[in-house]
Length: 378
Image 1 (cartoon, rainbow, N blue to C red):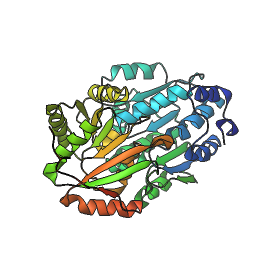
Image 2 (image 1 turned 90 degrees about the vertical axis):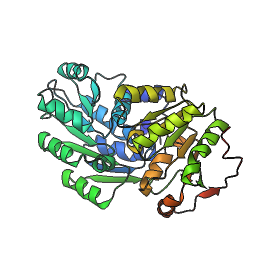
Image 3 (image 1 turned 30 degrees about the vertical axis):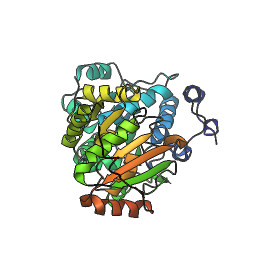
């Protein structure tokens, strides 16, 4: 199937063609026709399968085909992190290149004045993190009474991050008569229950369950003592210095500490996590994308917005204690059919986490042996 078989209007087809899109992913081919009809939807697909285009393309078409009556915001997209808000906004810019649709991403950690100024001039599509959205609503800069389409993106992560009360506040402010699109990488019972409580007879699309990992990713694990993790990482990075590597830690403190250790060993790195300013996070991300920076250390929440083509390596410096998170992490590599490499470090304390991960993905991860030579950092 090709995009021109999905009844997409010419201005959008022209834009996505220029962006190099040829055929839709499975989530896109199934979701776009549903959203175009105006139906509510629950879309479940793991990170990296093209969920953003699944709602962005039909939203742009629906807004274009329906007359606009005022400067009011017509579509609201809620997303958990600043990085995701920026990424979604970039996608809207790409697809709406030949349309008179105005869009804006708002998030905390930066001066609100430019955001407020743009809102005052009129915005059709608002992409927002819950905190900044409610802040600007309380200040009287945003009204949601004209919302036609509401999107909850990465809904599982939003609820994990404690945004459920914020989302409930927003739901009280948007019209009851609306189209609601609910996209999530995982669909546990409590999230499904929440979704059905806010949607109207939704159609459901399930693609690539979160328990599956792409077969383009080579997965392996080192069984290693805690104290051996750092020298092992340094050795691997030095032996692979030409390629970008995304390294995951569990904590912000751990990410900062690791950056300092790597820099002492002559490896340039940066950390990206919730305590960093938006400018610092964006700078690190841009340098990593442009390959000026080869090593990026990230926590899970910050990493949700990292969408990079041709990212060869992901390293789990610490295993996540939630098995689905492992799938999200390594899904940053091996995207769009390209090959990737995912390496995990497993200490004695993390063995139960590894067992749970292997139970979820349905196979044993290949074990890499460590030699004394491997651990030499000089």
